[in-house]
Length: 191
Length: 212
Image 1 (spheres, chains in turn red, green):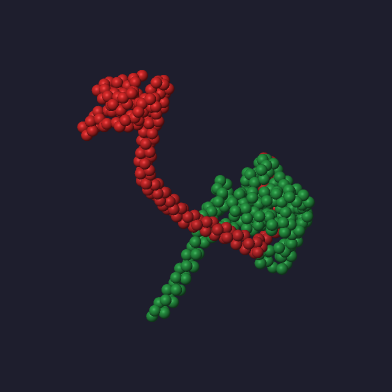
Image 2 (cartoon, chains in turn orange, blue):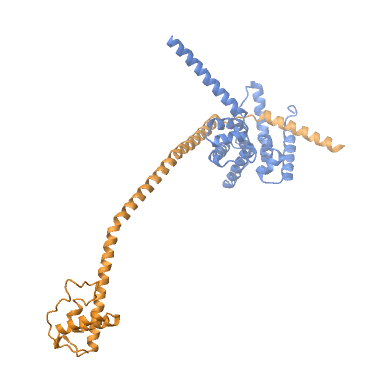
């Protein structure tokens, strides 16, 4: 029974102390402090609002700018790709030329190796004569394969061309070329 | 006709604005502290003004009697409110606003004491500082004497007990809230408050039996 009485007694004493304190300590914050704090709060609030307004304008503008730049870039790339096509054709042409040159070079090399293997056959031993065209006007290159002018320039190349025709099975063409070879180089000896 | 109509309209519109402002002020006054702070977070300055009016005097008295120095109290007061303003975007209503406000002020004071090793509990408070009531001259004199005694009694308390007493009386915080603010457990807070009350009672009643 004593404890509640003591507690209520101490509560009553606390209330008295609190009442004395509140009656005595009743100062208010100085006006200059109030003005300083409120000015600071207004400034911070206005700055925040200005930031919000600024960002509110910036975001759509930035979005439009990004979309516009992207479209411009895409259109530029498309135009560039369109103008790229002719050079591609040119490069294809140059590739075919390269291929023809490489083939000619290969033929020359093979002729040289043939000449080394067959020392008896040389241009110095034969006299070049005018080569008559084979069936001019009637025979086309596609219909009836024949040796080219380059191949006919030396006996070794010409002979190699004839042999390759024979290997391919173009015996008729090979015979024609053989006759033409002997007609052009009568002193030619078959290796 | 037009002039008269314009005058009537202007009077009516100005009255309307005044009524609107008064209504808005009533609205903000009725809002809870946390709601006001959230409004200020969204840029409502009037909400902060209402919030400030509720807590400015109690926070000032808390810092004044905790530091027992007029100039220090003003510096800490500005620092505490400055922190509240700057951290408005991060404010979350997880606890009562007063608990949050006084915790910020308490931490400002702790930092101040750490920075100033020579800080002592020497009283430098003007007893006539900013009286709020229109008391009669004899009452003012009596109050002035009591203020001096109260300040002395508070200065005699250990800093921790003074802090707990002021948080209880000025902020109106419960034992649990004071524990959160000071970072000590509930029982320690309770005993500090009990000791502070007992010592103050002894000091004040011995000084003048008549006022109790």
